[in-house]
Image 1 (cartoon, helix red, strand yellow):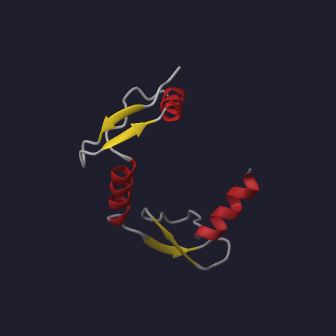
Image 2 (cartoon, helix red, strand yellow):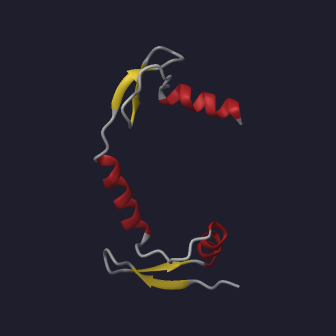
Image 3 (cartoon, helix red, strand yellow):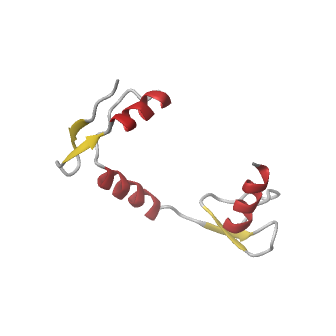
Length: 93
């Protein structure tokens, strides 16, 4: 049903392939627009957004160690370090 398409990256101008599998994925997710950037430019853009992110330090509610979170902590709420957060998420599944 889908065929690979060659598109031009609006960031770097290079050609990249929008594969049939990617097109099917986009359709399943309800995305109507084709990607405008190649994989490398999308990744670079994503990493640039993360670099400017401010982190706040708080105390992990489970292990008592330091926990860094990307938003200002609210008093009375529990926050978890990366390890405890991942462990809790795995237990919930």
